[in-house]
Length: 73
Image (cartoon, rainbow, N blue to C red; front, top):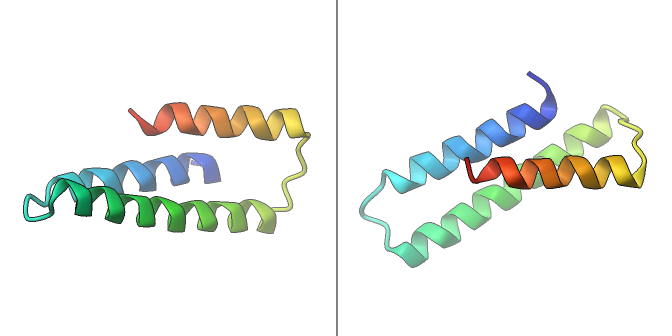
């Protein structure tokens, strides 16, 4: 698994975990999910930078759009 796959898996697992907690209101669930996704996104960015992954803007944009499309699954 690469960094991108790990990121997508972590986000989807967090979303699944949050959705299983019925004691959270919808508003709380959205807020917690947003905070977790923001944290995981920061981790992903730091990991990519640590790997010194050199990509063109087009490749980076394409990869980010792929990630966004896979988050809903």
